[in-house]
Amino acid sequence: MVKLGEEVFHPADVLNNLAPDAARRGRDDAFLQVRTELEQSVCEQFPAPIAIPFHGFLEGPRQSLQRLHRLRDTWESIVRLLTALALSEAARFAPSLRPLMVRDGKDQRWRECRRRDLYSDKLAVRIGLIEGVLHRAEEEGIELHVASLVPLEVLAEVRRLNVVRNGFSHEATKSDAQAQAIIDEAHPIVREVLLDLRDIQSIELLRIHTIQAGGRAEVEKLRGHAQSRRIRDLPLDSDAASVAMSATPVDGMSRVLARLGGLTLDLSPFLYTVDDDTGHRTRILDFKSKKGDDWHLECVADSTTKMSPALQHESLLVRLEDLLAPSGEGA
Image (cartoon, rainbow, N blue to C red; front, side, top):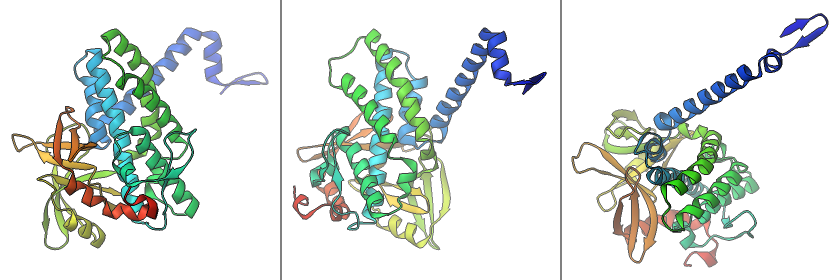
């Protein structure tokens, strides 16, 4: 503090009055540093499905349209990952959370979740699934780990950004100038959401390579934007070992496990991994949609699509069906 006679002033107030330009530059520099540190943290410490496309947005090709697509991919990966986490943890408490209720927007009425909502390709429905899980858990007094990562109040910002995303995803191809204008609008909102969701970096996403005797496994951590393999030895408690043993491959794809707050969750049928053509790098596949008899999965690194027979993946939804009201089980 600055003391002048009986008056006491905060140094920032003194600087702002005596040298407003210097004060502004100081604030701008501080904001830039915070922004840079956040974006670096997302690229290096966040789960790979988010970190990879966001790094592509920041450091990839500089054409605005391509950058906009990577920003969109980042946003979609956030929603897809949070939905998988919320549903997988909720399944551990079913039927206590039954019936799961959802709504497609904050101004919409709550309705019973239907089975087809679990694999909807609409992000508004997936956000509704997250909200529904958090809402029912709060009503029942059940403390979910995912609730500490995604406070209910943050979902309002999540929905707001989804409106922006819908605007450029459902319209005709943009020019670079139009794409840059959307980036200027959406990037700060994405940054704020990432800041609100910064505790996501505590989640460990794992690909199991081998399970060894004595409750140990060789695992690959799916963290940060670097896609080179990082395999390490990991001790498994009885719960984690049970989940890992049951997480057998699906159509040649490895399942992704999540560790958070002492829990180990199986994120299938929403997230998988496969080897690339060289066999030395791992490609992460997000569930995008079901079309006909196929499960469409999208690679987070390049947005290429892989199709897989839907029946194998839909059978994995059985553990979620206890969340549904009887009327919604077959719908």
